[in-house]
Image 1: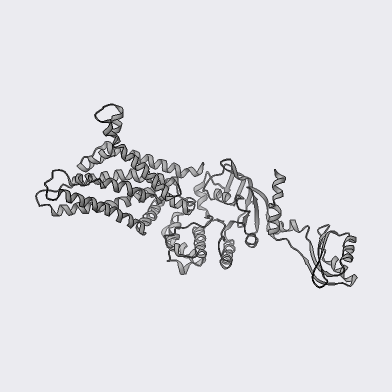
Image 2: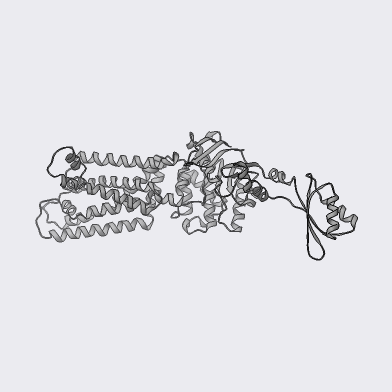
Length: 316
Length: 250
């Protein structure tokens, strides 16, 4: 659905996006993830035909975004950052205006506007002036606008920014529902957001793609070295000796906890699960165990791992 | 064409469904009424042998309205869209840049025309009270409106251009006001050139908008003036289009 090859965008001499390549398949929900200023908005603006790239190719549904921009714009529903709307218009009036502008006939637009108002939960505010709506409702108006012409691809730039937890949940639910019959590209710097809605993630940093993979694969890449947390009631020096003897343990850290327990962080040498080993150890010594957890890496860890400052130094 | 009409409707709605449009009309009406009152007080009871429109033009309120109202009408066209970010939603819909520029220009121009309609009402009032048989000539009124529309189209086009340049409405208004006033002041260059002939004097005479309008209010329709305003309007709109397109190569 989206093919981006060696995309570069220069603002003056500063590169906002450098040599970015990624693809999005039909029907996927893909997240563009990165800290602020990573180039997410720039990529989305290029895909939505707002501005062209300095070099490189971007295609949507097989059409070049610069050369066949008119057709491309017809098959994209785009919601820009901060969701700009005409605050002096009424919800229904605005959606109708947008539907007509996107090439729907009067009858079609009436039917589609009815459909999207209901789908986005705007029925009770459809005759209100947009400027008087709460931020959550405005966000839904923006979403309704993006999908009013039944686009094949929906591009959402920071769809949940500035919403309260309830509203975020509602928008997320809506995006998941839309993902059933649309391809969606969304951007965010909020990790749980992307983790929950997207099947695939493209991580951007300083205009580069650092990683592009499914959310599961990205997590697995790091769980290769998954550590185990344990709280054991035992003398620290005995514990220390036991861990040192064990061939499977690469690294360990012991710190005293309350009521005679020791908090241990243990990292395995290979990608094995250390929990049975620890349990066996505790059992043979007759110690007491009150916690044993495999700490799973969240996307946040992946994100921090790939975008941490050392990487910049390595590159330069 | 289809998109042009939809955009035009939206832009007109912006003027007529909100308070701003009526505030501008009210402001223009105050100035118009002042000019009209000044004229009536000055010539009350006199027998006059020039068209009423020429007398009204002589009060100079005409230029005040044109110079002040046009920047106010046009300042929001592009600047506001840029400031609120709706420019991005607009330009990522399948519409051409030219359609957007033309629709915005037409809407502002139509609004400007509506703003001037009360003048006809004022003149009608005088017509009502002039003794029958003395005759009230409507032809200069028609040519005056032609002049108003031609000068208006140029000033609205200048306003469009200024508004497209920036995201601040104030800066847009100040820029178009500055350009507009400079163009108007060029009219007076003719006086300093005086009786001299030659290229400079000819240019000064040709570009003197003050004189153009003087012809129109007398009932004289000179095609040179029409060509002058239409070409300048075209150039300004072309520049506006280039500014709007500039996001593609900037």
